[in-house]
Length: 224
Image (cartoon, rainbow, N blue to C red; front, side, top):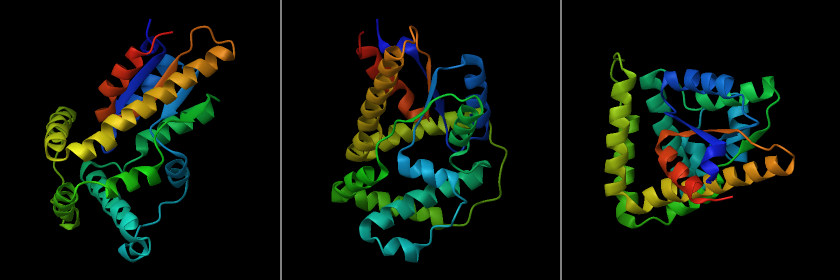
């Protein structure tokens, strides 16, 4: 029997307004013994603090690592404005419900500093083209249009396919390696619940949609 039977993986799109509602419904329906979120300690703390705009001048003080994080932040902010929800809304919902119902909360993602360092080691070609594509986040946003959830899903799937083709190294470290890390952490949560006397643990994991299948595949490979 695999560990997947203990874990419900809820996939979200960080910029989709519907994701917050889906997360809340899943938690209320599942009544899990533990909630896990795709965050590390630094991002968890940042999510709890008042939003402070990251300026390019501040990012430059930290060299290449600061620039990479600045670009990633701006990409998320642009998408959030376009689709009507800033990144992190679904994670905040999971955290708030965990606190309200006193459900143990776990952070299962890789440390953002390690992720950034790996990005900096990417092949020059991938870093160069990623930089060119990231420049579009500084262009004015077109007037908002009515966006259906099905349209967002289709565009997201196409984007993931294209990203893997264009950036195989970045896809590996941003998606595949983190799938392994998060699945391993989820297994550890299940094992800890069992040690505490919970016979059939129920863990609900809130992660980005692009991680769902990979995490489930790894969990399914673990036997108990």
